[in-house]
Length: 221
Image (cartoon, rainbow, N blue to C red; front, side, top):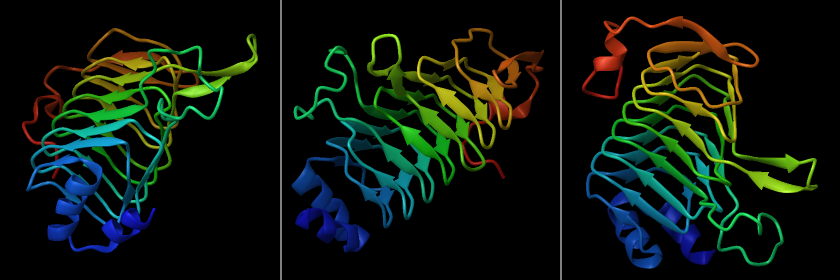
């Protein structure tokens, strides 16, 4: 805890060295972590990636940010590490991975709750947009009366609208949009599709001329 507190307040030039030396993180010289309590067991940050101020990321096995990927301000990112041997939760899931992986140019904006008890993978150039969305990989299995979890996959070039809920086991396929305030609770496979509603369903086809899906940099001007 003491080393984490010291690392938190160091200027970035020293903080990066401390994170690598004390915690074994792999952080590219052009990556950056702001005033954020981000201490997974292991972390890789590639060129140009960043974690902004006031984000909390704890109890995860692994975080990986691809080139120029970003996690914005004030996100709450938690999990249930597979290295925690003091509890009986999730003992039946031997292959579970408590990790968050963002592909190249992917972005999580701000004020979201990301539960990585199981893996969450967010593909290249995808955006978790707006505010107050929840990606929840774990819940209670009422039939077995135990904690259970399933991974979430967001494909490449996806746009996830504001204030959505995405549940464990869900897949949003590449080149898709999840509309604002939707509930994604299952696996979809059709690309170039707008999904929306509670629960989400396919609404319409997205034209492949839509420029969001062909951009070569993550930031949208």
